[in-house]
Image (cartoon, helix red, strand yellow):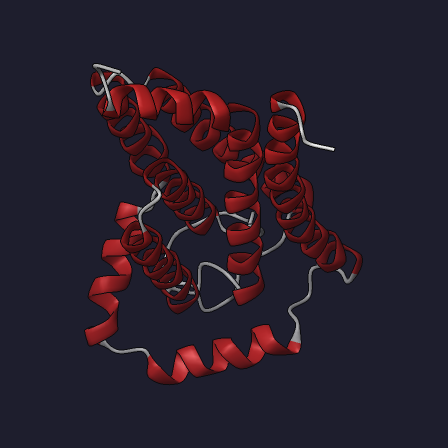
Length: 219
């Protein structure tokens, strides 16, 4: 039996919802496991931090502090989302602009709520004046959300590849500065990307129709 357009649309929405939901639940589940364990670091957390401490130097300080500034809340969630949304609005892709606004703003809000809920302390060897709220990493979640948004709205391999590199560098920089344990960055990645995919699912069809219309204005 052939699928109707409505059935095909439901299937197209289902898999992003499932994959995004699984990513988010894995990230939140990691936080729950940490909370049950008293928020103590895993062995992998401690080993990675030992490696970081052995390799700290002025050479790596500069890029790490630059990424800290680039990924900070007001710049990553306010200026970046405003620029992305404005760009797509100018390009007459209003659904895409709305998607970017909702995904990035919601991700930032949920991450802050989870930080309060889990209340994990940051590593002792931190180089930044930050309060508690180590899990999940807001910088990594912001980066993952923004890069996922750009990947799904452009459908360009090079955008996804550069986005992946950026997220990994952000994660490494956060552990280098001692702002987060490595599990915090993993949680931030899963939660940030998961939220972006979940929000994309119900808007994907409208965004694709809008993209096709802009690409072929005379059709």
